[in-house]
Length: 76
Image 1 (cartoon, rainbow, N blue to C red):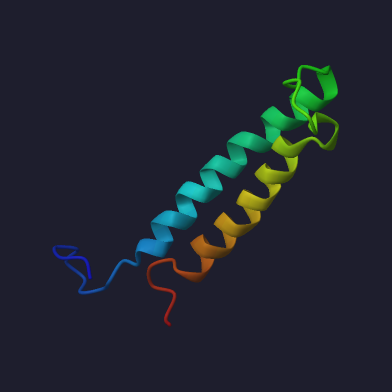
Image 2: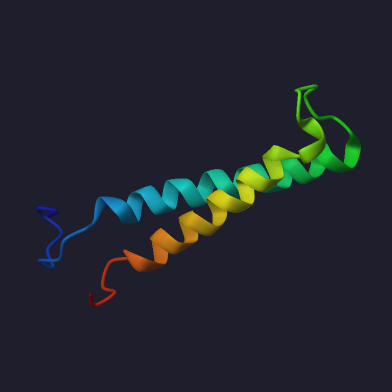
């Protein structure tokens, strides 16, 4: 429960987790696409699977879900 918001509503920690996860995902996707298109990927064992793009998309989806589900004033 958040003290001092002035509105008497609680802010869920999962809302902030969702925002952080969404931010990481939105940072990884463009970088991963750029690395894929230019061939500047790190020479890891499975680099041909383009893990940066896939992890970025996964983080974006989960972050968007948590941000929307636990946003303040969503009327649970």
